[in-house]
Image (cartoon, rainbow, N blue to C red; front, side, top):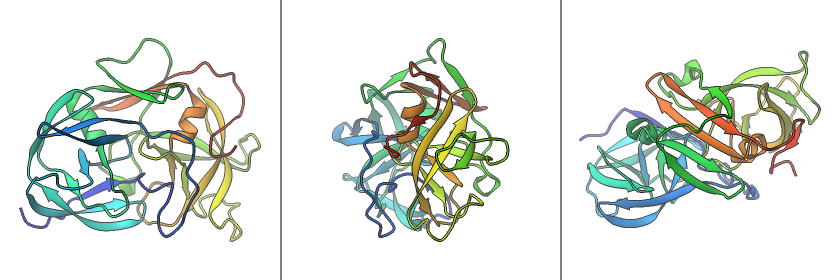
Length: 280
């Protein structure tokens, strides 16, 4: 295989440190599961709903490199290697991949993106209280269902966990006059939420690295978050990490399908504006 023109999205991997900036690590979790490559145990794979790849490897693990591809990550576009096809398993679910991406400069780690869940049909369950991940056959009964929406036009084909949210400046409750509706990406590969610089009309040059905002979904409520600001072209306006997800609900379930998918949230938390871990 020669150098490929295919672009893969690897969006959330450096939200706690990248582009030359040393952001303090958030307390919010990044969920992972045991990964085996050709029957050999390697370091766990991060479960990444913000990843447009099936498998990302920190090294080739003995697989032959047969080509290259372009990827869009938080730090911008870069070229990575493609391996030959191989058998792998994540969390006990075994399948075959046509290739893996390797050599991503911003993350020396393994991961599986939303194509893994779409391909295998498993439901991703995240328990924020126990910081554990499980794979299920079906969505649990009950909870709040949030349908995924089409991606922004600039990310056509990136059919993962986009949802509609309302964003407002500061930690005051959003209102009809000060909130903006945006297609945001639910990115379990990121434990810090990030927003494009100057997205809100109130943004100023004084917002050097982070900004206080509220993010709301009517059926879940409003979360206050201190978000990282970025300038990278091509990314969604708002990338929601596990710091905000965990403030919305105790248990999250992601189901991907050919007709997009849904998130199901089970929540024992009281209503009202809740702080995310990044805002505390």
